[in-house]
Image (cartoon, rainbow, N blue to C red; front, side):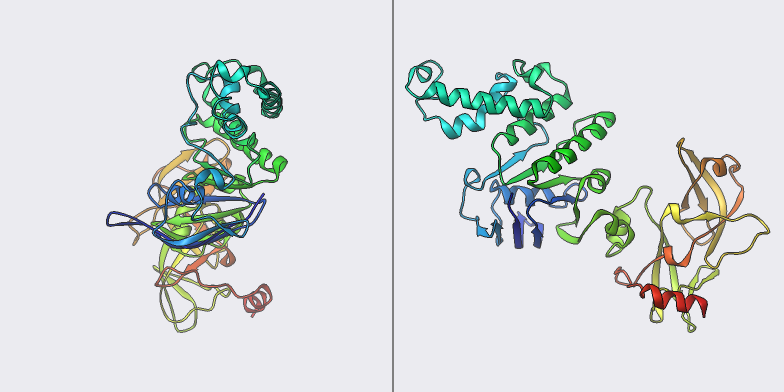
Length: 390
């Protein structure tokens, strides 16, 4: 396993800036996921690490050694592609063995007929077959070694692609949306297998996806990329609980975070439409802000009950019954888009379209962003408790 150091890497295709001075440190042995929408530059960055693409400026180091001048085969990385990149005329065993054949056999030894007759070929081949068998058993595909890719399911092909990377025993695994061609059920199963594989191998994994669920469930850290810029690098839960800016907050989370315009009053409270929200956990200057509330942070309030410090009322416009949870879309006067609350199905069953509803949120669960979209830091827990009591 090895670390990766990316320093001020930039890349332009024509007049389009795909990467804008991206810097990122990946620790050896960690599972880091580059996540972002299509076209944000994450795959280009992965290809630059692999040596399949050349950056316009900046530098890449692997294990502390500059590799910008090295071809892909000398960087000791293995790449797993979105479309598996398996040779259809080869068996599973031959596909998996190919990296070792290219590395250990001479050009003559690789010839189909003559190569087998050359001295030294047989023991090398036996060693390769043993290593392929061992990796195949670890991936539970040893019974498929004689089949060809066309005879395999999507999940089996993905395991073969992973096995081909594993036999090389590389320092770094680079994975470019490897699950995007799988159906939903198989995707859940395979992402668990990849996470277990990482724990077993202890190698450095750099994983690219546009699927935030994959990023949040598999990674040690997540790097959020948007329009060629790296916005935040942090553990998954921190990305969700403390997004660095509005762009990250809006991208991470399903359904999306609810956003409300607000103004800070002279007494430090926030004016949110026709409501006043005291938020003692933040210290904000006068001016315009945006408040963010995750759907699950809302709590339904009963009519005639105690009014919460931070509450918002509206009219039910849509109800999504999802079995384990219910999503309530409620329109609020003054907002163009309805807000969304994630509630217990028992609560959702009591609601009907056009019902008047009120939801409250605890002040500490409200995210605050300034006029530039940057997250406003929270005061520490002790200061917050003292302010709340006062």
